[in-house]
Image (cartoon, rainbow, N blue to C red; front, side, top):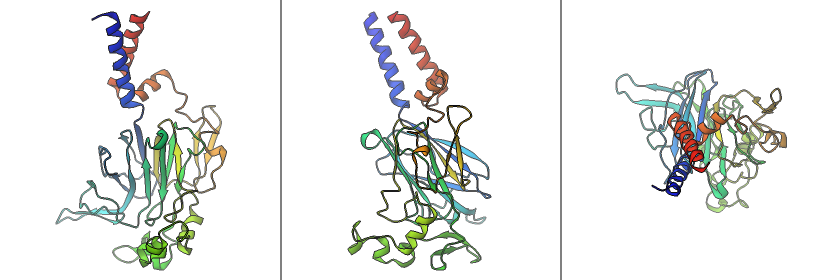
Length: 320
């Protein structure tokens, strides 16, 4: 093989490693609730499936899940789950996916459920994400990007426990009827087109916020509260960030800035401001060591780190 051919082969190898890793993401799930949460994950139509569609997350536990590039889908947390000792059927009192198993296997959340929705590497190469209460609410959840860019690349979610304040007509009660385990949307509770933004109310002009959606919006200003609540509830990030998804987050979440002692305190249930965006603060992850950067572009795989490093070294030898 000629020297030029060897150089081209190594360039292709490097391109392959960069292409397979740089646009992928890692979703890190953390449970700060006082109880176990069972995350559910649903890939959108035509989107590559994830390595898991459901798992248990104990109190204080975290788990990372690799997400392929151009992935879209939904994530939620199931609560009050148990397995029937006789039938072996797995069920949850809120946000059950109806699979009868720990894994949801392609089934979505049964409302009411707090939903995190993602479209990665979408229009213009941007990630689009939101936290939605359109299908009701069952537990606090927050999404925080790490390493992304853009003025609208910031935390979103709902850190408030709405189950206690949920109106009686919207409450989903536990099996024994003693406590509210979730809060229905007005659409689910009443089935009225004006609450569902359907029929004659199927446009932004005809479907307006209701007293119930305003209750959600006042408690969680960044979360979707009804179908056409786009302007204050959709967020975008460039540069393919990773995402932290936290159940029952504390009201204030601090992210360490690359300046060392400085911190960026993000209050997810407040009106977004410039100081809370990646455009106004450089987060840890944007400025990484060489080893960390190689690990990122290789998809977090140790073999990938080794291969990229070796390829770079040989390319250097051939060119110089």
